[in-house]
Structure formats: C-alpha cells, structure tokens
Image: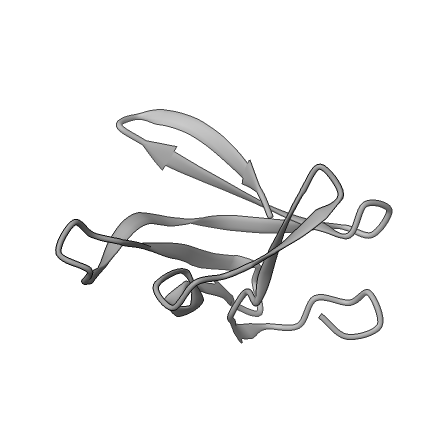
Length: 89
C-alpha cells in the first residue's frame, strides 16, 4: 500500500497487529502472501510451523478484496464449502 492506496501485486505481511500490539512474524508466517489483481480479485495464503518444524500452508482463500481507507484494512470475501465468508487484514 502506498499513500493509503492499494495497488495490485503480491504483498507479504511483515507483522500482525493484535489489540494495538505489533507481533513480528516467524519464518513460516513470513512466507504468507496477499495477491491483489487490478480487478480486486485475488488470494491470501498463510503458513504455520508444523510438528516437525516444516512450514505448512494452513489457510488459502481466493476471492474479492476491498480496501477501507478509514481503517486501513483489507477485506477479502470468499466462499468456503458453499458459504460466503469475509476476513479482514
């Protein structure tokens, strides 16, 4: 995001915010990516550490993105098992 404008491309998160606290990503979480296409379609994937220490894909969503300038959040709307869901980032 540049100057509160979302541009298309592949974005990698570098931290999470939870209740006002910044949480630095571990090596597996750092592999996650948000893809935003020019038409705001895209995907989100997230990785977690597995039992053996390997990085495993834990979530993958394909849908439409929306950007809220007021709260600086991205929201993806996707379908999971026939149910429409949303997730904010």
